[in-house]
Length: 297
Image 1 (cartoon, helix red, strand yellow):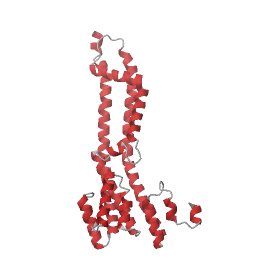
Image 2: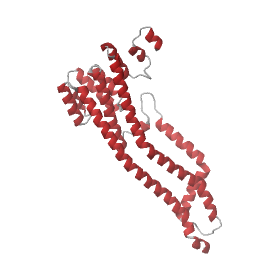
Image 3: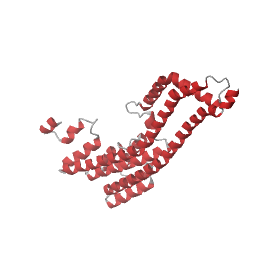
Image 4: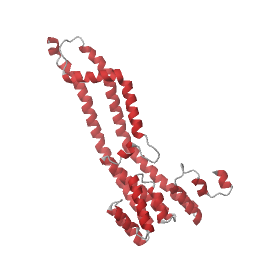
């Protein structure tokens, strides 16, 4: 790339040769900056955009890190109990002739299975995760499609998509890219193939003279609040500014939602894991509670 630039090839054309690293969104912003002589400003806008995206991703990861850690620790505890601890405790009851309580027998059955086949269980789970996360060219993985259907997650992903779209479109318009070209690039950051397809129809409408807000209202991709704001931006000639404001509002909503989700999901995980591990402990201790009955039998 440096060699090409030294030879006089425009920076934007150099980037086009590496689409795996530089999406068309970046290229268009830089190309417009070159054409208008404001490459420095365009690069600054692109940097701010990438920083906002990274900040948003970081907040999502931070909110989900602790719940995921709790789940992994809980599952690890259950696995160790079933595979290593329970078999040792079970040996305490080998000399008793009386039948063990049903919960204890069921738990020991599960423990025997894990003890005998724990490697196969891990391999099976790894294979399932691999198959669910595998994706073919041009087609999303099963896990990716599933996230759009999960009640809590899909709302969060939708808001993040709207925020990313608004930010991208705002920066492109501010850089001087036409609305038609900007829509094509901004649509790529949404991720949801359904919305991408509908935005292609919006572009078609705009090319035929339909206003942006009217077309959005027709396809109902975004909420009415978004459409009304876009209409205000169109009428006032401040669409790029309005879109930036929309992105900021959605970012605040996402941050608020993450706090609520985190405050709800952590107690729920503790409750579920507590019930499972507590149930296992009770099943293990039942024979000890009934020790007199077992000896007497």
